[in-house]
Image (cartoon, rainbow, N blue to C red; front, side, top):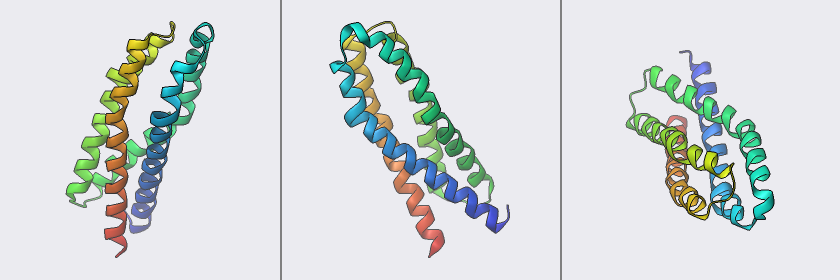
Length: 146
C-alpha cells in the first residue's frame, strides 16, 4: 500500500470510528431512552420507520470502518492496537446482529418494556467498545504523525 493510500485509509478509518462513536453515544443517552416516551399507539409505526431510516445513517460508516480496519491490517503495520480495534469491531458487529437487531425486530411489533430495557442495557457494551475504538484510532494516528 502506498504511503498516500495508507493515509487516506487511516483517515477514513479514524473518521468513521469517530462518527460512529458520537452517534452511539447520542443513541445510548438520548434516542433509545426516549423510546419509552413514545405513545404506545404510535410506537409500532415509529419503530418501523426508525429501523428503516437508521440503516441509511449507520450502514455506510460501519462498512467503511470495517473495510479500512481490514486494509490497515493488510498494510504491514504490526500494531497490537489494530488487532484490538478489529476485535472490538467484531464484537460490535456480533452484538448488533445478535442482540440489538433482534430487539429492534421485536419492537417493530409494538413496545415491550422488557425488550426496550434489554436494548438500552446491552447497548452500553457497544457504546464502550466504540469509545475504546476511538481512543485506539486516535492513538494510532497520533503515533504515526509523531
